[in-house]
Image (tube, rainbow, N blue to C red; front, side, top):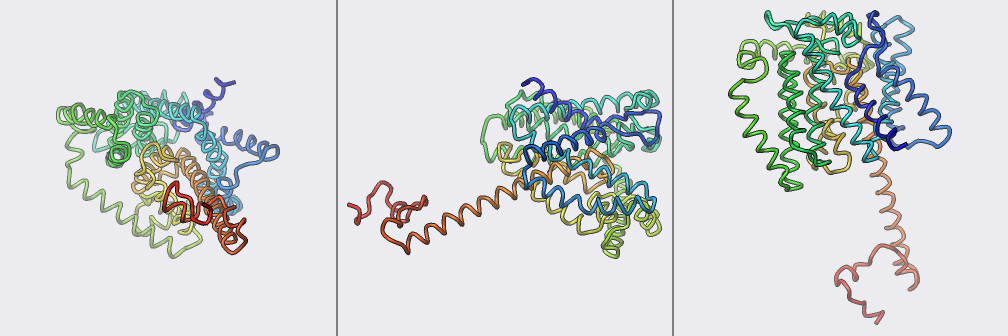
Length: 442
């Protein structure tokens, strides 16, 4: 029984990252997360009927899922396949998010989940390696890549697409290895080589895909977690991590250069052109979403953005949500991830530390690409929503308890002598002189 409780979280974490295609011959095939989402949804329904569910996480998940549900029904009636599929996967992510949150409440299951996710990151990078050596068709036949994978190049260099249909999405998923390894290192006190493995997986993904944005975001995440732990915990583990980064990472960077070489990172003309295109798509997507506050759906939104800018993608996941579902959901999602990312500064041993670290990485990645097209990130978002629902529930419960105690104390002050000291909250005269007995009780 105990072993099963550890294997199931590991499998969930692994397939959350290594989201394989179940019918490789089909272009629109179900994926592992789709089937697991149905299974988890049925389990959640049984759990609700027999034992009940936590109101805070479930309530917030349903609140955020209301708009995708309405849009999914409308898109299905009008034949908008892409919006229907995105909305359907958002709804399947609701049981995923609830189960992942409840799994992390148990220490052993949380550890198994993180190790499974880290293993999935390693597996996704192995797929990138196979594709970079000319085995793209093999990965497609094995269900490790989509049949309609987008082929991308940097000048004449092939960019491996990975398990997701685009290199940028695949490297974003594999870059989660960095915060996962740091969480294991600081929370479960694993060897510093685990951090080297996680950062190495992230760097390998950058090398095979020729992507820069995920590397910049990962660097910010690593430094944030490092300084947060150094300030909060003040342990020697931060010094060992600093030694790894300085005495191992820096010489390797100077000797071998960054992923894809210095030319890729120092090509200022290419960087300027890339940033200009992203800025244009961001501003135009924001303008269109404000003009259509109820959203446009995937196909109409892409077409209108292309008419404005000749660019199909918004290059921003928050603007992707605003364009498809409307700015209201985008603002709510941005606020939630921002609050969760701030908790990363509390250190790796704080409440919801795992969600905060992953949320910080996800928050940064969302400013660069439309990552909500990948089911992995839709599930992660719903996991974060459930975590914030629990956090809000705990805050409300604490506030209600404090108000109840304050009410009791206030009633005791106006009542009889016996009622004055019946409240569990200490009176000020007890707090002013610890151990002293008031004069009227001597």
